[in-house]
Each structure stands twice: as C-alpha cells, then as structure tokens.
Length: 130
Image (tube, rainbow, N blue to C red; front, side):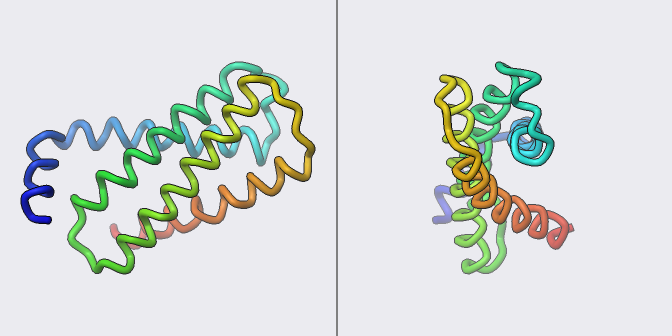
C-alpha cells in the first residue's frame, strides 16, 4: 500500500488534483442541470457531455483520492463507493440523454435520486475534512 501511494504521489502533481476537482465539478453541474432544473431540453448536447465527462472524472477522483488521504479505512471505502455510484449514475444518465433514448420521468427520477444521495455524502465529506 505504501509503494502504491508513493507512486501515485509521484505521478500526479497537486495541479492535477485541481484539474480533477474541476472535472468533478462538471459532474455536479451536469447532475444539477439535468435533475433539479431539468435543463436538458434547453441544451441538448451540453448536459450529456457534462454528465459523461463529469462522471468519468468522479470515478477517477474517487479512485485517486483514496490513496492520497490518510484517514480511517471505513470512511475511505465508503467514500470510494459513493464516488463510484455517483459517477456511474452520471455516466448512465448522460449516455441515455446523448443517444436520445426515451426514458420515463419515473426512471429519470430514480436515477437522479440514486445520484443525489452520494452527492450529498461527498459534499459532507469535503466540508468535514476542511
């Protein structure tokens, strides 16, 4: 575990962490645009791109930041799972919107609810760590 952490710290400089945070913010922005304000009708191409790129960023951030933090293991594993759920639901929703697959409003609400629970947890973890 120690060698893997040193390797990741050597490969990824701190500027890359800022880049990943910006990509993660795109995921949050895409989720909120899609599910809360329902703006996917207004911007047919931008919201799916936000969702897919942000979801990939969230998956990547969830994997990398686990190695960089030195907190207790239970919180780390739970945070990793939350990033995984949030990122994958974001990618699924973005793919459905990008290829214009017609889904019902109930399914959209279920995916949105599944995505917003980890989003709240990640925001809580972020502010708790500061």
